[in-house]
Structure formats: C-alpha cells, structure tokens
Image (tube, rainbow, N blue to C red):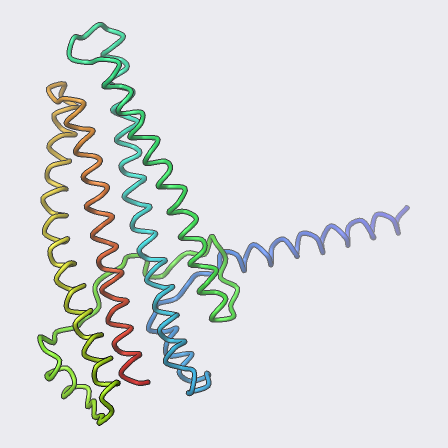
Length: 259
C-alpha cells in the first residue's frame, strides 16, 4: 500500500512538473528586437545573416502590428456593445429616435468587428510561431512582448545619394544600383503614406470621442456613432499597418544594401 502511494505520488509530481515546464515555455517573453539581433549576429552564419535579420524584423513587426490592431478592435467592440445595450433600452422605452434598423446596424458593426478580432488573433499567434521557428526558440502563442507597440524606425534621408553616401554604398554593378534605388523609393513612398495616416488618426480619434460623448449624453445619433466607429477602425488599423509596411521597407533596403 505504501509503495502504491509512493508510485502514485511520483507520477503526479512528474506530471505536474511537465505541465509547469510546458506552461513556462509557452509564456516565455519575447525580448526587444535589438537584443534578438545582437544575439544572432554573434552566433549565426554570416552568409545567411542578412536574410535572417530581415525575416526576424518582418515577423517581429507583424506581431507588434497585429497586437496594436487587436487593441483597437477590442476598444471598438466595447463601444459597439455599449451602444447596442443603450439603443435597445431606448427602443424598449419607446423613444422615437431609435429604430430597429438602427439596432440592427450596430449589431452588424459588432459582428464585423468580432470577425476582424478572430482574424487578428490568428495573425498574431501565427507571427509569434513564425518568429519562434526562425529563431529556434520556444516562444508560444501566449508569449508576451517586451516592446508590444510598433513605432516607426528612424530614417532621415531625403534622397538616394545622401543615403548611399552615409551608408558607404559603393557599387559598379548596374542591376544592384537599380535595386537599391527602387528600394529607397519604396521607403519614401511608405513613409509619406505613414505620415498622412498619422494625421488622419488624430482627426479620427477626435471624431470618435465626440460621437461617443454625444451618444452617452443621449443627444447623439446611432447612425453617426456607427459611422464613426467604422471610420475609427479603418483609419487606426490603417495607420499601424502603414507603420508596419514602412518599417519593413526600411528593413528590405538594409538587406539589399548588404547583398
């Protein structure tokens, strides 16, 4: 009997230990991008380093972008749920300015937001697994990021000649020069789009705050709130996507520079 209890206890201990180790690896935090790059530069084969750095940056920026997008969608989801509850309450009380059509539109807006949340969650988890794969680490789908917010990387060059001189790019190969010039133009395009998206983000935030406040005070129109939430989702998601594409374009230029 004593031996049986000991065996059962040992099995239970091993089982709990396995679960603990598995859980610990699953939530292993993802460090700053700079620390990841420093580590691989000291360990990896130099011949494959540029492409690997590019892919690491790509997946890292993807994780940040999807996380920011998910935060926006969660915020919008909360606004839709609150507005639906308030609209149904007003409708039940017989207020003339709320119709069943208004409520249906808000519910459809919520459904669309939930659909986007499912997509963003999958994208976030997939990007984490891709980063884990290329680094050969145990980052899981629930791993937290040390730097979860995506911010534009520094790139202060206004023309190709200035950039090539600063980066000491010397090449007599015509095709390589053309490739670099195309990559530089792509960075410029993405940067301009990002700057424009940043301006739109500020205006959209102000619009949403105004419409939500009006609706909460009972003087807002549900259709106006619906439109504001849709615009807010599209513009802010678009802004963070523009930052992602800009950062990736800079990473691509740096990769091509060292090919």
